[in-house]
Length: 342
Ligand code: NAP
Ligand code: F7E
Image (cartoon, rainbow, N blue to C red; front, side):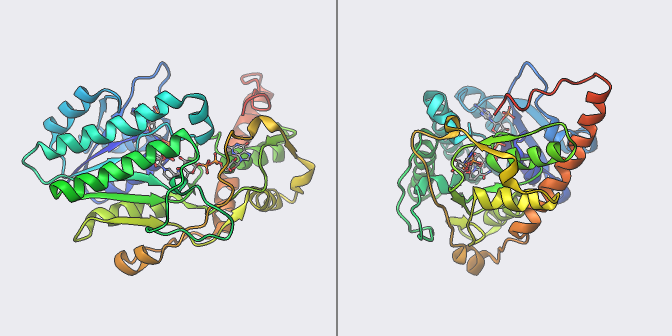
């Protein structure tokens, strides 16, 4: 089996490509040119699988339609997982056009290319719980109404709809995975969970004093990225294409996440977390809770990692990272800048 993954250098890109490589897939990843090397998450996979040709990387960009089309036509993969996106909701208010371009054009380009090939290429679209908007008390499933509250969410609604349109119009095996928040030690460091676990690790190692956050009362249905990428894979192995929600069915506030994370190192979060309005968004999704009944019934998928285990996994990894940073700081090889960044 041959798979093409856009967004292979991201959090989910690592877990999904690892899973596929271990199942003997030939994996092709789309990477974009950056002035710094941006493959650090997948470096362990590069050293293990690139030399044999089981893993291959190709320069492209979701906004560069001709290169995307050429790549798909050249590879003719069995499966395409479209994971690439400008995925930060707060940044999408600051870079709305770029977020929209990345979140929409690439999806139609891939679907159009698949439609024009002779091969029955299966397609996975990374849809998001952000599309729902979310209000307190509501449990969201595949039939819930979309109420996007950011340019990011609006772009995801477009791609979700166009994926469904291609499935219904052209009989393409095109699937939307509507994933609620999923985290890991590889989560980008400006998302709230990782920002907290990074801060806990550094505060514990005495190389950071405080962490500044925005809305502490927002709640999210947080799961583990490794469980969710397995769900993506399961969706493309099903007999017929459809849309499925992946969630844990539990929601926790940012405050609860901070409390749990600081407790692991025996500290009280209230002594270290400061509030700043600068982390508030122009429009906020206050509450998200998913209902994974359909995926459990039809695909037998269930999350394996509890909220407590997820927080523990992230904090423990970030304590180890901070320990290495401390050695560099003590030897004057690193100047900490994290208290000034977000
Ligand atoms: P991530 O860590 O932010 O990774 C995003 C990936 O997209 C990176 O590989 C990035 O490349 C790539 N990318 C960004 N812009 C691109 C462009 N113009 N052309 C090509 N590649 C581009 O995101 P993630 O957490 O793994 O999420 C994977 C997907 O699921 C995203 O589409 C996200 O919106 C969606 N999603 C995520 C969650 C979640 O909770 N994690 C929930 C629902 C949906 P660089 O490494 O070069 O930046
Ligand atoms: O924010 C609040 C913030 O940026 C979660 C993406 O993967 O999941 C992710 O989007 C909540 C929000 O994730 C800070 O206001 C408070 O209410 O970690 P986040 P997100 O916006 O939920 C969805 C499903 C996706 O699809 C996205 O791609 O936490 N919050 N203080 C903060 N958030 C951040 N980032 N930083 C803070 O300081």
